[in-house]
Image (tube, rainbow, N blue to C red):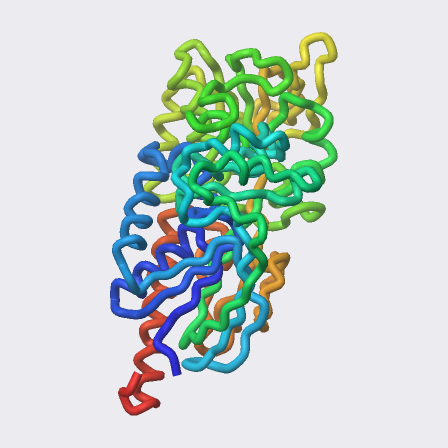
Length: 423
């Protein structure tokens, strides 16, 4: 028997579930496939509606992790097998090599010496890093990682350059067996592949980007140091369009509504408007969804005379060959007829695709029709939370994770009672 919760996923939901359970007295273990914790939230520029940086909340949680001996975490790890049942699971975890030990001081000497480069997945491929790299400026853990697949054969320039001997090129994968009384699945989401939306020409037009790319463009630690410029020529963006439901509510792509895209585009319109009072933004939408507490945020944008909200789904995006400008064709539902407009940049509000189906977690996980986990169908002692279960914003995901933590405590209490209180 074990009084430990194992959390699969180190994004905001997984972190919240682990921290809440640990602060109630239960040991928590976080398994995360990336070399850092924080998930998609760590890639955002700001939260809505307060427009504060997400690292305000993440840093508090990282501090809670560091200060609590009941929490352990394993980046670059994946669950290989699960056996047992509620109160008595055994989870086999594979930990992939980082090739950089805890001796790392983040001096950067390794990256300076490294001759190889790789696409920067933190910035959604909009720039590159060296093969040995710090995932991002505020990464937790704050330690470099080496992508051996990007290295040249026999290269050890990083190891030779490190003054602290922190590079270990002999590292091998290792496995751990972790006993757990309960398991929380917090695998989160992936941005939908916009190249699948044929009429919007994401791959063919350089100045068409996705909403997650827009977050990185606006961020000071992003590929342009926070300058909102066009990928094709570096021109400052003055006129921007947002195409809502890009692939969402579409039987050929994502049939579901991703819930947060409207608020995300409203938020991103402020990124440009706050930088340049002369800039303009137009949001093309089917329905604007800003429920309850977010209504005031919507009204703020509606009151901005340089922001236009047009009811109509984008039918087609083409490119003006002479300028590189995207040209948007939309059926204007309220105004009547088709409209055709030219912009400096178009942002596709691509939706949330659940990550769990592709994660190959060795559990009997029931999925609903859109690929999200059906939490009611999970076996006893196994719980799911956050966007693994449904599209949601950060606040609701954290609340959901707290509920999952409470459920693990109830499992622990039940297990302890069955064992005669001897856990």
